Image 1 (spheres, rainbow, N blue to C red):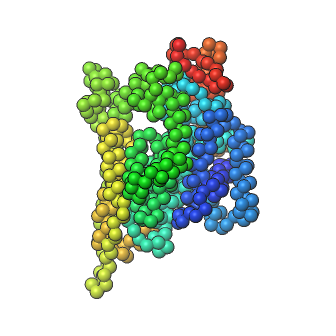
Image 2 (cartoon, rainbow, N blue to C red):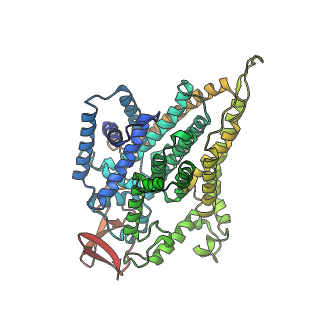
Image 3 (cartoon, rainbow, N blue to C red):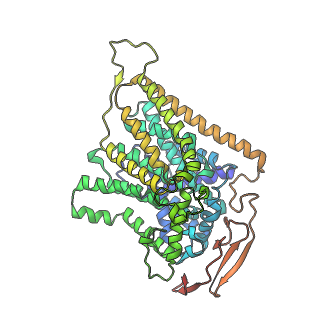
Length: 559
C-alpha cells in the first residue's frame, strides 16, 4: 500500500515539476498549483506522443525523462519546495491513493485495447496500420501515451495505472478549491463558482470511481473545467492559447467532444476579428502542433485522420481497409444506440441506426440508465435552488439579504456549445459515457440562469460550506466502503488494480503468430489481451494482411 502512495506522490510531483519548468512565467491563474500540474500532464502527453514517432517508450527513456525533469525543477527552485506545494501534492496524492487502492481497471475496455495499446507503446515505435490488428486501436486516447510514459525503472508496470487517478485528483481539487475560496471569502461570489458547486455535486456522487474512468472521464472532467474557466473570462484576459490547449486535450481524449473547438474559434474572432498575424501565431502554437501530431498519428495507425469516420480517410494508403472502417463506424454507432436490445429481425445495423429506428431499443436500456442519473441530479439542483432563494429564519426587513449576480460574459457561448453537443450526443451516439459532460454542463448552466437573482446571501455561505464538506465525506466514504468490500475478496498483498488479468492478475496465455515472417503478434485465448506481450489481439487477422519493413518502420498493409 505504501507503494501506491509513494509512486502517486512522485507521479504528481513529476507533472508539477514539468508544468513549473515549461509553463509561461507570467501566469495569473489563481489555482496556480492545479494550473502547473495540468500543464505538466499535457506537456508529458506531448512528449510521449512525439517520442513514439521515433522510439518505443521503454523503461530507459522514460526514466531519463523523469530524472531530468525533477532535477531541473530542483535546481531551478534552489532546492526549496514551498509549504503550499507540499500541501497540494499531499492532498492530490491522498485522493490518488484512495482511488487506486484495491480498485480495478475499467472493464472490459482496459483489457480489450487500453492496456494492450500501452504495452505496444512501451515496446514499439509507431506502427503503420496498427489498427488492422485490432480495430479498437483506432479509438485510443492521449491517456494511453501518458500511461506508457509512466512505466519506468522506479514504478515498473504499475506506473501505467497512476496518471488517470492523478488527473482526476487535480480536477477534484480545482472544483473543491473554487468552493472553498467562496466559503472563506478569498474571492467574490460569482456564477462561475456556482457552476463549480454544481459540478462538484455531480462528480462526488457519480464520477469518482477509478474502475469507471476508461478513456471518457478525463475528457469530461476537462470539459467541465473549460466551461468553468470560460465563465470566469473577462475581455482583457482571454488566453486563447490556453483555451485552445485545453480544447485539444479534450478532443485527444474523446473525439466525440469535437464541438469543444467552437470555443477557441468563436473567441478568436471575438478578440482578434480577422487579424491575419494572430491566425498565423495560433496556427503555429503548441496546441496546433499537438493536434497536428495527433491527426498524423491517426493517419499512420489507421489511414484516417479521425477513425472511423470514412470521409477523413485517405483511400490510396496501403494500410487502410476502407470496408472495415465503414463497418466499424456503423457498428460503433449501432452499439451506442443499444443494438443488442433490438428485437426487429428485419433491421440490419445500417437500417437500425437511421430514421430513429433505434429509439425503441435504446429506451429499454440507455434511456433508463440516463434517467437514473439525470433525474436525481435535477432534483438535487431544484432542492439547492429552493434553499438558496428561501429564508429559513425570520429576517429583519430593513436588511437587504438578497443579492443578484452579473451574468458571465460568455455564458451564452458555453450554453450554445453544450446545447449543440447534447443534441448531437442524443442523435448520433446516445451512450451516456460518450457525451455526458455536454448534458450535465447544460443542466448546470440552465439552473445557473435561475441562480442569478434573489439569492439569500447567508444561505450561500451555508450551502457552499455544506456541499464542500458533504462532497469530501461522500468521496472518502465511497472509497472506504469499496476498499473494505474489496479487502474481503482480494489479498492485501495485491493492492494494485489488476492489469494482467481481470480475475487473479496472473499473465494470460497467448499464442504467437507470424505475418509472412516479418512481424509477429499474439492472439489471446482468454478474450482480453490486458497488459501482456505486444502487440496482442483477440481477433483473427485478415489473411490479406502482410508486414513490411521500410526505414525501420513496420507497415501492416494489404496485398
